[in-house]
Length: 89
Image (cartoon, rainbow, N blue to C red; front, side, top):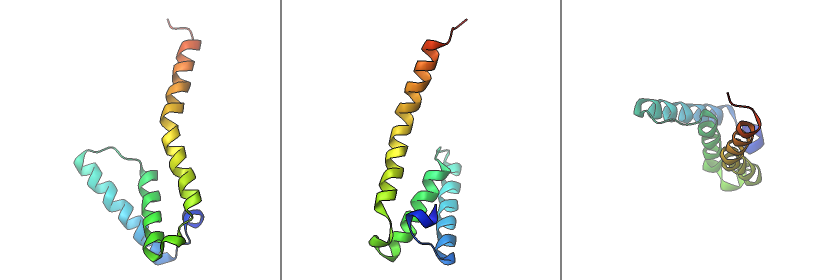
């Protein structure tokens, strides 16, 4: 993940993992459900952007965000279609 979005050095990887861990602990304490994948991806983008904005491959980041946006409605559509096709009994 880190090498596709931005080039991470060991220190940057540590910072991304630490930021992701802190965020996940905070949301767990607050009872807020979050995706670990979303959290670490955001942390990796943040580390890359902290060096310079052009260090992040925004095209890759945009495709990831679109996949996140489309996942919920497409999953709901597939679930509804499956429910309609299968017999209920």
